[in-house]
Image (cartoon, rainbow, N blue to C red; front, side, top):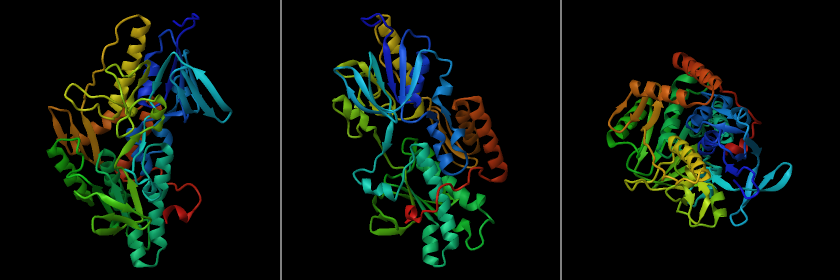
Length: 427
């Protein structure tokens, strides 16, 4: 309890996996919760690439935070941006359409996630968009679909080939999933729909600076994933980093590759909100936290999800994946409960349940530690796992329906190009 006898005020910044799981785990705790997020929804990020590639619509993988938490009476949702944190006064400054407001906290959780990292080349963002939000996904979907439209109306053969050239920079799970899906769209979904181009002639390149794709997976699964990508028609280029990206294409070593559509999936950096804490950050802008996920020198401030960095017992950092963020969120809730009860806070222990990545139709890889498998069995496992972790019956039902239709027809339900035909966004 606070000195005034009121219930302690817990402010949670970020409605992603870590923030939402903390909020829900405190449903019966004697606290007041204010959940702050720039958007009004929780996003299931693992399926964001399917919105970008027109397989799903935005509401299929997102749900309003107020709807999710409507029965939890100890939480208030605020749609606002955090502009400042005063760790000494224990206040958070919020900016919203109604103005600026400062709110106090007894306990603070920062779980504002990560953004794109261009390794000091932020000017590449204009020509190589990343994928972190629903707005990113909708913009990218428009860019991908417009490329085929521009190729259809282009009379110059070289320009037509440039519009039909796609590059995904980054060979992690997002890059692999985007590349495989885009190859399927070109070779199956768009078949017979154009008169002046053959979409199957589109070239999809996956560019990875390291020696192999899916570097977080075992070597054999990485090799299987590359073979499955190449079977879909994806050109996998490894071992050479991208040196420059322009509106015309990208520089790969001594070679300039023409590609009017480049997508960035190569790196992330932590939300700049971490700088407000006034503590040392790592190279990616993340907060090195204590074993209980609190900030050094600030036991009432926690950091979780992609914004936090913590080494496991094996010396490896906790990975920036959804299961880790959920576990961190539950741990923070348990830590708050323990402090309210005057008990000792246990250190966070990450439980690794495995890695999954889908490459395309009936192609995926699964690493469960002792067991690894790929192909159609891994694909079914990936489908069931993602359906299980989606929030809400409606989302699961709609996604299952869309996946079923796509499986039997190769069609994608969300191929509507929204927005004006502003050619400046693709030049």
